Length: 125
Image (cartoon, rainbow, N blue to C red):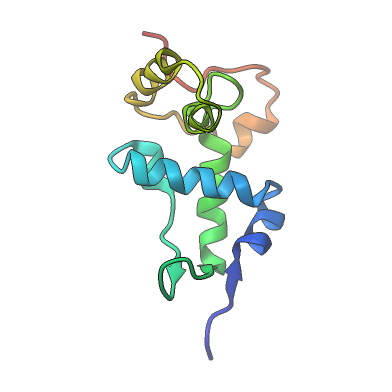
């Protein structure tokens, strides 16, 4: 019996995000393959260049963990990815790249539900 493969749209619905976000995550992975966050992303299957990408059902929890652990908002690591689309100030991206060199702090489900309020995902220098 063959395993069920999911297209990007199906993965996005399950994760509660857009397919553009998933594309940005993998763009980040291509640009910064040695980064701790980039290593969290599972590989996808693709039959050839510019063909549909597929993820396995078992990749969904890994993607969910990645989504929940990356810093969000303007100071998040994806800010540098999106800044390239808008040709924004490169100094901003340099600051973000300085931050992502630090090891990520993974937030557990208990900590999320525990109501710790706003938290820093990067240790302060």
